[in-house]
Amino acid sequence: DSHRNFLDCFRLRSANSSTISKVIYLQNNPSYSSVLNASIQNTRFTTPATPKPLVIVTALQISHIQSTLYCSRKHGLQIRIRSGGHDFEGLSHVSEVPFLILDLLHFRAVDVDVKNEVAWVESGATLGELYYGIASKTKTLAFPAGVCHTVGIGGHFSGGGYGILLRKYGLAADHVIDAQLMDARGRILDRKSMGEDLFWAIRGGGGNTFGIVLAWKIKLVQVPAVVTVYTVNRSLEQNMVKILHRWQYIAHQLPDDLITDVTIRKVNSSGRQAGKKTVQAAFKAFYLGGADKLIPLVQERFPELGLTKQDCLEMSWAESVLYFGGVPTQSLEIMLNRTALPRPTFKAKSDYVKQPIPESGLQGIMSRFLEKEADVALMMMVSFGGKMDEIPENELPYPHRAGNLFQALYLVGWTNGEDEGKYISWIRRLYSYMASYASKSPREAYFNYRDLDIGTNNVGYTSYEQASVWGLKYFKNNFKRLVQVKTMVDPTNFFGNEQSVPPLPSPW
Ligand code: FDA
Image (cartoon, rainbow, N blue to C red; front, side, top):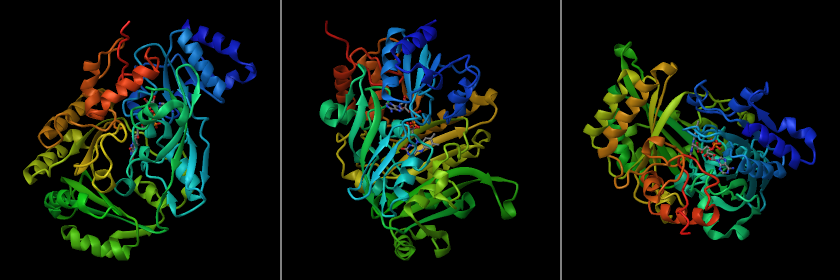
């Protein structure tokens, strides 16, 4: 009966009980399912077998969040904080123990100050709402975060956050200059009152770990009014493996005004090969400047690509985000639409690559993409270097800085839930094949591309050693400092999940 007790407790603490029906959703509420599913991005976690929250709290004001903390502690419900619901493993809305979702969807204000080139953004806003807020005021300011506009600010900033401005400016977390955080005791802290250790930890050390980040103050960055993008597709029959091989030597050394990435997937062949399957690589770029400068630069540094003027499109930075997100760019208003993107059922994994993969190694990847389980699969390689080479590894919890050629994301999707095992086993095989080419000791992974295969906490107490199995992969040597901060600010592990940094046990 913990959900009923929770409700009674919440009611007792509310001055205005008439709003409660708009804030608390129990499983018997007719709107429960639609509220639950509203932002679940990976539909692997919308099946009848998926564990469901006993309560969903869609807080309208700070006191609702404080009451949620108080009453969930009193009645033994674990809290899962949800901002945009894009967690790859569903950790903002799934748990194995009795739990509730604290949904921040109503905390979504965006306040852009063009003159001082800063903004405050609440965690429940999406990247699209932030970008729209910037773009509706100016074409020459931007923010270096992710490309899918439906991603939530809360989880994204908590895990680092990168996009097409990565090589020029680094991560979203690198540009957070203040924050508003509620700790486990319900106190609201800012940068000054939380102290530099905790402020360091929340900028990349993972969500649902140190507290509830309500809002972030960010420094905006400058961009030209016109940027250029291109996509050049090359299939196996068009020398793709050789071009991709060369790309690995070139991409991380290009000027930091240019970022390139490559996505490979299986497609139908055309021409004489029609009817057969092949693998295609989409070579994409984003350049901070006009096509007149980009074309000679790419033709000189990466002639193997065969870039032509027709491949290039000039647009604004905000439009280019939609271009990279695969959204038609007629109107920026679409950035405000939280359901504009398809919601696949998928499993994903990530890697960092520090040495070019030989052609024979690339061939092995291609043959795995020709297998039948890879019909809906992709591998996306994003070039590093530039600003990422300049930021020390311990500047923020996110450690994957100098020395990476590129980051790889592997993803496989499916439609028939019964076949899930087959597809997950395909991606695990691809990942184990990649072991010889990816970073080692530790095999690094990107926290925001959450992957529970790399290790998890126990439901109860988790030792430092056990958590290090996954923690060192996401955070390398920064993991130790994260554990120290956690021990200091949340020693009872009130905020926790399968991959939250654990506190050290109390010596008493
Ligand atoms: P969600 O609400 O699921 O939260 C994720 C985690 O953070 C959970 O553990 C949650 O409890 C916690 N959390 C959420 N809000 C919190 C808060 N206010 N305080 C404390 N903890 C909080 N990444 C990237 O770097 N670049 C990219 O371009 C993309 N693109 C992309 C596209 C798509 C379609 C998906 C599904 C994902 C991405 N990502 C990405 C990954 C994305 O950055 C990652 O999934 C984020 O954690 C999503 O944040 P949400 O708030 O949407 O997730």
